[in-house]
Length: 594
Image (tube, rainbow, N blue to C red):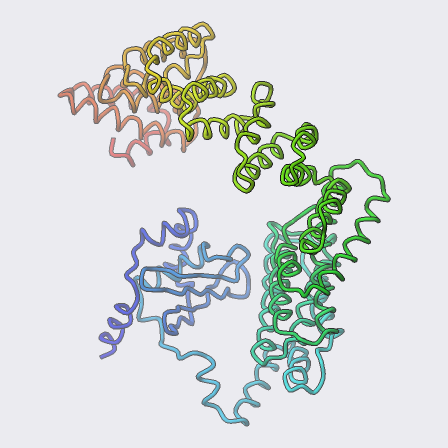
């Protein structure tokens, strides 16, 4: 009966394979996870619904908590409390999945925790919590904070909460992975805020999220993080603040939360834009009343004046001015008249907005003059807006054409080329394609030019001129790519030999050429493969030996396909003899079956 139960457990989950696990976590994590699985590192394994949970004994004294949730098509989500476990791509997740694949009997069925707790009476719950606090004394401060907050006895004890956050931040050891562990602990704290949300205590939830975010940001300059793990905690708090604001109705409470969101956004602006304030910006723009919009606009205007008073010409200062300007415009969009809009944009360096607004107002000549100062990127964005929003493509084209001959930015030429082709202006498209090729002579530019030339009907004469020019410039690499694309294999071989005489090495290019020639010109491909093999071996590294073995297999396949099996046997025997003093190479040849 037990094995029948295990079989039904497995069948309710989507079938997984080693390859699926490998594809998810990658080769390195898979290999290490397999060792963990073989060594029995997974324990306390359980299944709740479509979720697998377990502990995994890693390199630290305390085991990591590992969790994988499935849906019918495969893995929906995964996570691990190890330093690199976010998203579930680590070796511990691999070990959990391998354990489920090969030893599903280790997983006991476990109802959801909430369901089990509801089955306990009050006395049993009290005893359980007491035992948990005895086991983890740090829980006592959390319990002391949450009981009055959830019962409405009093608000969140901000100082107690700050102390919890500081304890985590101020005791991060100087070792790899410690920042991830501390951020994960803070992340678990943030999840506690959901209890307040579920209880409908939105003001307390906002206070809770605000204090955590404030403490992290106040300490941010002293924190070391690998890849934004502490800022991710702040973003989670920011999202909680946004949810709380949407539920609050008391004007005073709303103002306090709005101020907190504004300060999060402004911190990000002052730092140069980490992306922390994105949710706050959206909430300030979309979730406020007109009166609240005006209030925040006053805060931003004050900060704008302070930044202007610095009279700094630094990039960061200009960026801050633009950020304040964008926010004020978003907040006062319905009340700003055109002249006030233009003045604000000019004060904050939003010159692109000035040009678009002038066009919208019919002041086209003035817009042309203002557009001269735009960067290429700004000009492209302005032209696209004038075309798509205002429907004035001719003007948009004129603005871009002022840069087309002088710029090195292919995006401007690309946009003009798209418009020319949409309108069927083949001559203009041809000139623009030529300009793009001159700016960036590569295969893709050539193919666009060729397609338009064929539409015009005069491509062959143009092609000859292009090829002669490339030969004069000794652009053999590009010529090889062009000839291969056009299946002019003999010309490709000749161009490759010229390239080989004038440059050393790029093994990857050599292999690409050989691959392209393998069927049509096998002898040339064999010669190129052979040279690439020698270059890999010359690097005297095991990974390079593996690459050499991979190419030798291609040589073998070509020779056997053309009835030259004996030639192959002689070749590989001579190769092994020549490099008999390279045991790592010999090992890679054995692995490859050579």
